[in-house]
Structures are given as structure tokens and as C-alpha cells.
Image 1 (tube, rainbow, N blue to C red):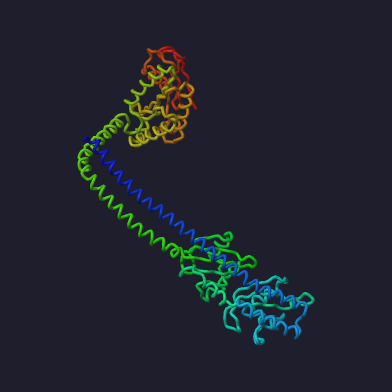
Image 2 (cartoon, rainbow, N blue to C red):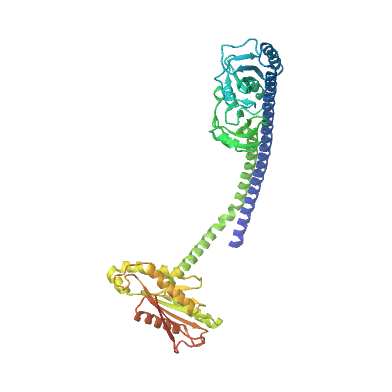
Length: 524
């Protein structure tokens, strides 16, 4: 078995082991992910059902109390608040409280906050309720709509209650008092405790303005708390009805799935929340157990595969070192070959590369019957630059000019080279005189735009002179040296003509470069 065959065998065995292990792992991951999705779906359904039941309960409970208040308001409007009417109201209130377990009490207050009638055995004349929020609300809002206020700590029963109230008007339309129904917080607590939402689950009943009415788990400091500036309230209130949002609680730091619902007929909302950790606890346990079995199987497969390819790898190791050494040698040769064709200072093609490329492109132009152009470029007064600024600055100048020259080339087939000293050359395959002139003008301007200081140059900045030679459909006898001499002659014209310019040395199609040429001189 040769090295290539052994290498393939080792690779195939390794790939087979990896495929088996990956397949086992991905199957388990997919199964676990599907199980998680199913668990989350069931949790979402459960928490939605709880929030729906809570919203229905809140709506029904407050509606029952509101219906009683509406009846009381209507009776007061027709019967008034005389002694006989108050006695009838007392009996009506007592019956309503007895038949509606959530009702804690029903009360009527006059315009000064004094209690006129109650569902309890005796009036609580010692208390004046003009300071209560619901009383002040109805006093300032001349409408007959029901109002649900924040939770109240009862002065009489010493326990927390919810309130729903309606305004009473006098015959002249002025404020005549309030009819009030109170709901026992304990009845809500008893109802909420029936739901299985886990030890870290939560239930919230609140007003749409952000006031918390009740929260499970129950804490007194949560009753009446203003949630309007909390993240959970802002997040939930922006959701559609029955939406589920995952939020980290600001109260206890637990991440929960929150199902938000608005109560249909009243400015209330409910939130049922289940702990994410509790909801996924069973899934985590099952996944962990399955994962242990899967990883045990993967380890066994890996041990078997490792044993199988151990001997193959040992034989391949020595041969692979030889291959690596050969590759390194080839890479080194490639780098050396590249360095041999590259100018060490500027990074452009060197003279050797230039000569080979010029001959190749001339032959191609002859074979394909196309034009080609050559630019010879010289940095103006470069010796003076070196004498004034030093050779280090001179080298930096050449690098910048070379970089600008390379940046001006827009086609991948164009070749920029350092011809020697401060002289550069550009080979432009399939380029006519007009294209060569445009490039020469661009190079002259780009070098000027470098604004390299040159006190011994007329323009006080570094400039270049360019000679341009173009040949179209070169004759079989024409060679690259003739094009080079023509470009060099054009460069000479640019230098003797004042520098910082380019001169075009062009021929007619098919004309031999050694014949009569037309000289054009361009300055900025």
C-alpha cells in the first residue's frame, strides 16, 4: 500500500467515525430540541389557560359587584335617601353580600363622606371617607361609570379590600355622594391558590394604569405597588392580548413565561407566569440522562475508531513528514521565484519581469492583431532630491510614487515595473493611444497630488515625466526593443520639454516603429 492509499484509508476511517459520532449527536440534539419545543408549547398553553381563567374570574367578580351598584344607584335616584329608603337598602345590601361570597361590603356615603347606609349591622359613623381615592374621583368626575380604585386597607375590618364605586348625583345634578362595593382580597387569594403554577410561578392582578392589586406569592408590600415605571409593565402593556413574553422579574429575579390578558369590561389586566426553570426541569433531567447514554456511545465509537486508525497513522507519519518537507520546499521555491521577479524596494515588478512581460505582450499583440502601449516614467530632478533630503527620503519617495503608479492602474492585465533607479515603466496590453494618454495624464496628476516637498523642483513638489509609445497591429519584424526605444525617446522629449508632462510617440496601424513617428507633447 503506497502512502496515498494509506492516507486515504486513514482519512476514510476517520471520516466514518466522525460521521457516526456526529449523526448520534445530532439525532440526540434534534430529539432534545423537539422535546423542548413540545414542553414549551404545553407550558404556553397551560399559562394561557390560567390567564384566561383569571381574566374571566376578575371580570365576573367585578361585574357582579357592579350590577349591584348599578341597581343601588337606580333605586336611590327614584326612592331617594329617606329613612325608609335607607332601611330597604340595608336589607338589599345584606342579601347581596350573603349571596355573593366575594363581596366584603356595600356602602353609601353622602357628599361630605359620611356613611349613610351599610351592608353591616351598624353604621360606622366614626369614619369619614372623604379622603379616599374613590370618593375624590367621583367628586371630580361627573359621570356615572363604575370606577375601580387602588387597594384599600379597611379602617373597620383591618384587612385589604378592592373597591368598585359609582357616583350619586342630587336632583340638581351636583355631587351627592358615592355608592361603594368592597371585594375581599382574601377571596381572590383563595381562588388564585387553586392554580398549579409551580413554586416559582406568579399571578398578578392590576389596574391598566400600572397599580398592582394583588400578586401571588402574596406580600403586603406588593399590594398597591406602582408598576408603571417597571420594565415588566412596559413590556406587557405593549403586547397584544393573550401574548406570552419571557421576562426576568424585578421582584425576585426569576425568569418567567408571562401570559398577559386584559379584562374585557374593566380597566384591569391579569398576568399568569410560570418559571422557565421549573417548566423545563423535567426536560432538562430527561435530556441529561439521554445525553449520558449518547456520549457514552460516542466515546466507545471514538475509542474503537482511534484504535483502528492508530497503526495507519503511525505508518503515515513518516511519509507525511516527507510530503510536508517537499511542500515547504516548493513553497520556498515559489516565494524565491516571486522575489526574483519583484523589486525589493517598491514591490513592483523588477527589470527581469518587465523584459519578459514586454516581449510576451508584444507577441500577443502581433498574434491577436491588437494595439499595445508602453509608458516610461522618470521622477523629475531625483538626483537633486537625494542630494537635498538624503537617500532614505529618496527611497521613501520612490515607494510613494510606485504606490501611486500601481493605484492608477485599473485593469488586471496592466503591469507596473521599476525599470531602474528613479525610472518606472508600465505595460498596457490591448490599449490604444487615447487610453495610454488618459493613464499618463492620471499618473502625472496623482503624483502631483502627493504634495511631496521638492525645493529643487520648479513646482516645489515631486513630479514625473512620461514617455508614451503605442503600436497597433505590429509587423512580424517589430520587436519589443523598438517599442521601448520609442517610449524612451518620448520620455526624453518630456524631460527636455520642461518635465512634469507626458509626450506621445505614436505610429499608424501596421507602421514599423523604426519609421517616421508623430510626437505629441502634453502639459497640465
